[in-house]
Image (cartoon, rainbow, N blue to C red; front, side, top):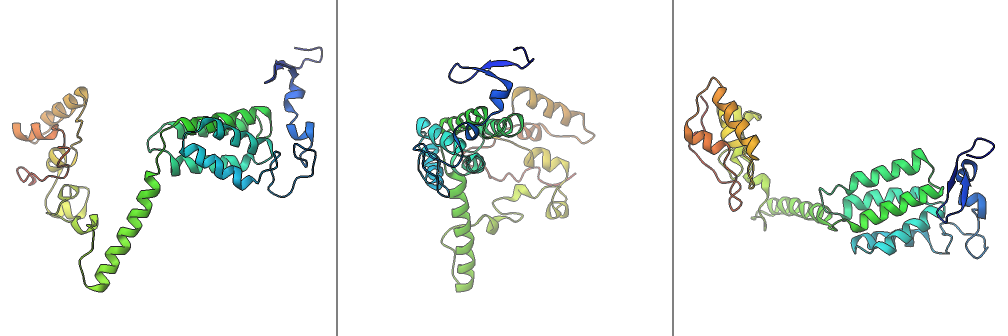
Amino acid sequence: MDDDGKQATFGSEGELRTDSDADRTEDEETGPEHNDFGEERGDNETRSGANRYDVSSLLQKAVRRSDEEVAAWAAWELARSGFAWNFWDRINLYVVEDLRAGHEVALLIARYEELARERWSESSWEGRLCAVHAALAAARAPSSREASHADDYFGELSAERAAAREEGREPRYDHPVDELEPGGRYDVAFDQHTYEGKALGRDGRFFRTHGARVGPEGEPELSRQWRLQSMQLEDRKYTEAELARAVEPVDPDDRWGTDDEGTDGD
């Protein structure tokens, strides 16, 4: 700590910095209106002279192709050029558009954004580091456009179903809605939580032995024990076949297979 009581730290280049130094942005040091060549920047121009839309597009393609260095540069360029807001908006979009579902990177990027915007500032050197970290995390995550492809496919599937009805023909592809009815392929969906299931007299017995089954990995051993013990403590009595079915993994080759035995209510 220096004589004025300010905390001294080291910057990214090893230079000694105080709290006052850390609060200064790169814009204050070099001027926000000029590029690296000292020329006045145009609208949407980054400091290297590129268009921010081009850099943002490059960032997305780098994330898709798992190119860590290019993704990191694009993030740094946007952040140092006063377009950090644009970077954070886009990188969060890429999480849902270009990365595989279920990856924890979404939470990690959200944390980096929180640090950059709330603990420090987007234009600070700490903010730039957060942007680089977020870009690297996205580039290192498994890439997939599965959600985008699903959106396209489901939209086309619904449009095809509507067109087939209007033209009086059979749809070219099956639609889940056409089999979503009691006795159909997805019969198990109609348990006590649906109007149709209640009308069929399906109660907790059906839910436990059919609707609550998981798979194809099956229940972990402790969960399996809890399920069986819970059913054995109920007032209703279950057969050995029903107890076995309740914890039996779903067949991966027939996930929606029907089993008529024991489907009635008490």
